[in-house]
Image (cartoon, rainbow, N blue to C red; front, side, top):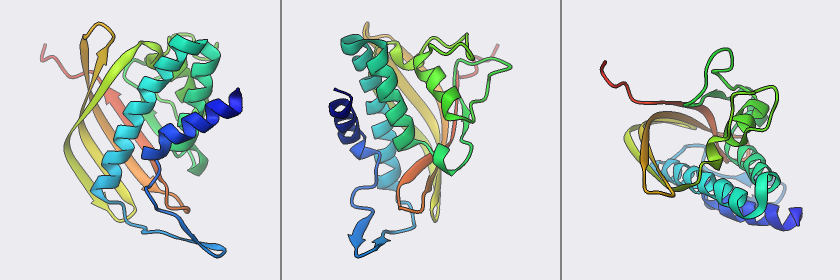
Length: 190
């Protein structure tokens, strides 16, 4: 069961991976070290699709299934294997505002961790649609940054908009990893 789920999750995350980025040529890997705009957009879309999948897995298979999917997403999409990821989720408060470890990110997405008692599982809220509207994308070699809005639509059609900044870096195998993820509610002006 777990192997089937991991295979499905790996297939889902295909849009997060670089399309054809690591072509085997003997014992070495060949890929373009530079990130392209289309690759950034594919990673963002993959992130949104994965968030929806975590919620769907929670609905159809319960907490354990959602947690396994979320863990696989974090492994596939984020750069925790490269060092700390600078992650500031939308709905966090001191002293746990920043999540530089996979454990902290997983707690934010699915809750259930006594070390993060205020986390209720952002990915478990039943999101049905994720739209990403970049204000700008800045690319410099193997690093790209984006800033803009992400609009989440829940099962009742209610939309929530957050301000989002991401930074991406290609790892040594040519896979784009999220290394900065900052999210906050838009300032209301009062």
